[in-house]
Image (cartoon, rainbow, N blue to C red; front, side, top):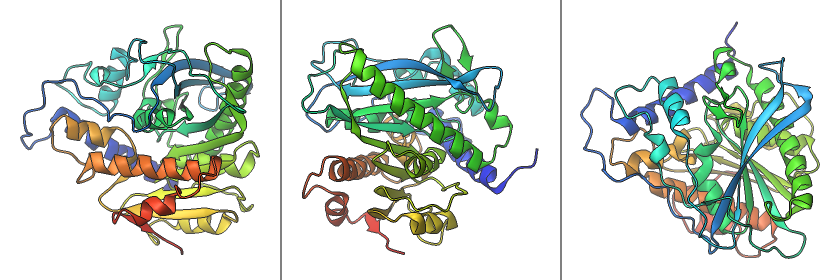
Length: 382
């Protein structure tokens, strides 16, 4: 199959993630510092509320899977939310089998197979949701980068939940290197071998995000003990890399989304219809600058509502995920940002400020305030 320009871009960014995983395991040719003997931990959430998480398996029987058409489209979702207490057992970052497959997919050898399964997180597994007021919690649906698991956005999701959001990260079947199902299947990244067109991936994922939005809202109306109550009028789509392109498509095509954000993702889109909902474009140091990616200029012109374009100095493509920070916390040479912890902190603060401003109408706490107080953040108005 012919490799498209979009596929090349996805491959390039997948290779960058592979470089980070290699740094995580100190398998490069250059000697790395001795890693910490303690299990690495994600940064603590910055909000005041304890966090719970539960995993849901969804199947959209109205659509055959584009990569495996013999089955309906399958999605695995981790939903983080404010919890009543922190007494629930700690959740797992990934399973041992998922850790093994993630490392194998990136050709990492001579390391413990359970390396990534030992990452410590802060959410309690299936903790009882905290009581909600009003119409319920605002919901943020998260889509990861191509080949990356939904768990690569855990630090962002936990932080949003601690601030009073429900955050649902989605594994898209055959688009992540390891997606577990309760029947024992572990679905691999079949699409990774097909060199898919980026527009097709973004369109398929946008439909996934819409389906997840609808199903979670329906479940929140019926499963009062296990699910937090969600506000159907306050739902955002946020994605990293190709997930950001999917968020752009979802916000432009599904009126159920009130806002959206793209975290350093090329905007694979064939559409021309104006996107009227608020949208945040947040890019890495190089990719996020005007002129670096023509799709951002085209996307910017389609945004007819509230819009912001920022880039963050000292960051690269994986600064928006957990992997750069984990490399830093293991004490290993990092292929990502100069200050991975600081980079992820900026991303979390900016995304939260955007959502507070657009979904909660919280005066004085918007992204312009955050950007004005941090010299690493550049605002662009092409």
